[in-house]
Amino acid sequence: MTKSNNIYENMKNPSINQSALNPEEPSPYNWKIEDIVEILEGPLLDLLSRAQACHREFQPGNTMQLASLVSIKTGACPEDCKYCSQSAHYTKKTGLKREALMDVEAVLAKAREAKDAGATRFCMGAAWRQVRDGKEFENVLEMVRGVCALEMEACVTLGMLTQEQADKLASAGLTAYNHNLDTSPEFYGNIVTTRTYDDRLKTLERVRQAGISVCSGGILGLGESIYDRARMLQELSSMDPYPESVPINTLVAVPGTPLEDQPRVDPIEIVRVVATARIVMPRARIRLSAGRRSLSDETQILCFLAGANSIFYGEKLLTTDNNDAAADRALIEAAGLKSL
Picture 1 (spheres, rainbow, N blue to C red):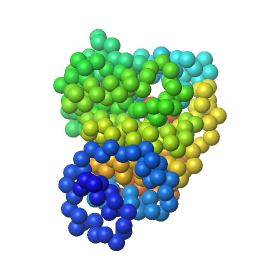
Picture 2 (cartoon, helix red, strand yellow; picture 1 turned 180 degrees about the vertical axis):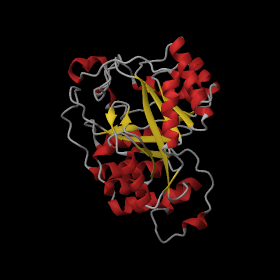
Picture 3 (tube, rainbow, N blue to C red; picture 1 turned 90 degrees about the vertical axis):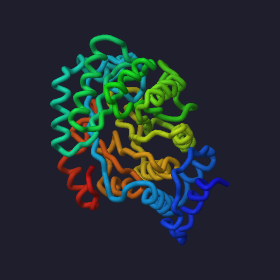
């Protein structure tokens, strides 16, 4: 058993003084699927205790990063993701109108507003299947440079990338590239048919090769099983290195999409996934993302206890409504957390 594995085993025993372990940087760990399922389904209080011990060992305590997400190009995406209102396959039913790529200065104005409101990370999403070279991509590069000039972390999600495009984003100063795995490789084909799981992984490899940090997570509530959730976490945690940023999204069942009638996820199941993600990826920032608007304050605080240390902040998450910013600030203050 490696030293890193001993750390995780010791977390099961609350009598052990964690600070006495003085662990080194965890090396990548090849988690077995049965181990992740066992963690995910274990007694809730034991799971929370283990996740909190892990969080305190590898993360700065009592902090919460605020990230803002803006749709810089909305609608008419050729992908058929069954959860997404921006897919051109469902436009007639969702009624979402296509919008052109936003002007550079308009995006930077949004970034300045987000910074003034307390956000330190600014994320820009474009409803593209893949990036195409040309004027629009050059404008995105200019947006990235502008956000970096504001001394904010810059993140984009633009679809699939070539290596040359990833390198250009790195040269522009991009902090992170978001490209979610969504779910397990086994369940993925039930949700998306216009690209493969391997396509997702190849883009993430190019992002990593360019020296950009990886932001990749998944969505709960797609109809997946506990096994699928565990497999998704296994895929993420087995990356070398695993993503620096892991968004945990909950399905927002948009009318007009194929998943419009999906039932809401039990909030405790969200807490379980957050806690398990913290345990298997201890140095990642776990981001409580889409679907947070449906969660009570108490559930969100449980997620913070389980290891979530970032929220998406602002009135919109791409095309869906998000929590009230003032309410978020009040929640963070009530929990005794410091925003950063």
